Image (cartoon, rainbow, N blue to C red):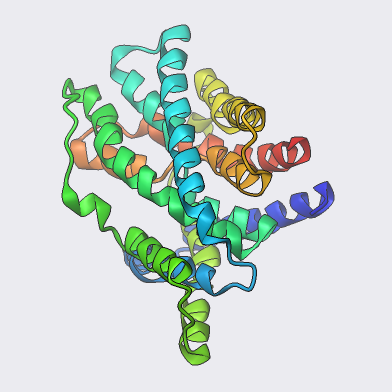
Length: 306
């Protein structure tokens, strides 16, 4: 896909975010709708699109699963190390340091990652992205939790078995089983699942728009460190990963997909975790807004480079 095609694709995706923003401002939808529709996306549609990725004619080889999982885990370790370096170099205060670490480590794979890599690379990239959901969930709800709670002076890392059985992870396990066991599903069933999964991309983008509509944009634009964080997260760290992956000879087919997933905006889970632990959402909201807006420029530029 050419640079102009990628820019066009990102504009299409961003247009859906704008539509979500507008319909929220016009009161066509409200927060209750967002919560319920968000649950539909997370619990039904997103798992469906992951399973549907295993029906693609361009489905990856089963031999790719373990390398993608290892490479993806290494990507998260790189982001984790980078987050500690960032807060140290830029002297982020104790209260916000955990929030910045979270923002740098965890990107919006489900709501932005699936639409972006699926649009640019095709269905096989969604399969790769779904594999990365395994280390994402494990790290986000253990180390990520601790990062957010550290704002309240509690940095204890907790692990709960249920984090390995979220709806998207269950969809991932099913997709992996279909690929590894070479299971062929009846066309009526596969078409139905694919159709259900197709709701994920437009639905997720609309929800991002409705969420952004409730943020004071003027206040979002005044934090210089957020811009620096977005540049590190969505451009410099992905390029570092791509360079290291190329250096050790990783397959470019999944290296490029993982690099783009590394460049995703701040995960929306961060806001939910802040609300859950009573942490001020101002910084995480700023990071979510700026990084999501930044994506329309950074992702095409990154694609041009890699």
